[in-house]
View 1 (cartoon, rainbow, N blue to C red):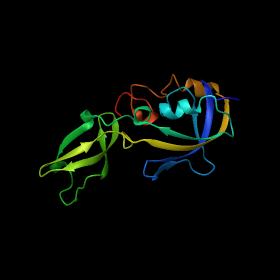
View 2: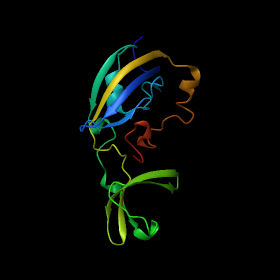
View 3: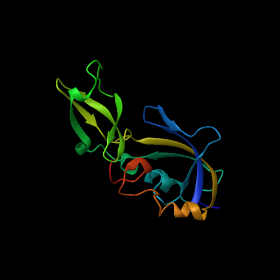
Length: 170
């Protein structure tokens, strides 16, 4: 069975950056499952998988534009230094999670100034070229409940990039 719209797909994968650093991978024996064509994975990987079958292996390089996008300047925010613990030594690259109006949000410190911190709310992989080693573990018809999830809280293309969409909060 070939990967196409509305098929449920399971893949084992390793994700590396240009540097060769492994930044994500599926756990041994626990492939990533998703409904093909629903925006649950980044567009560049999804398009490379179309037409593949169980047992296929492939290496895919995904550009930032087809991955998590390019960093967006409007997602850099200045936060008063006083909002951080006084005794905490802040450094660029440090990651934090905070409560936002729509739930938890994550950010990294881009710059530390005397009385403010420049926070980067872009996806951590924004601007990165992504290198995937993928094995297609299974392809099957989607079940009714999996298809129903698309219409009951599935991936909202305007919500955020955590599901691979390019709009929203990134």
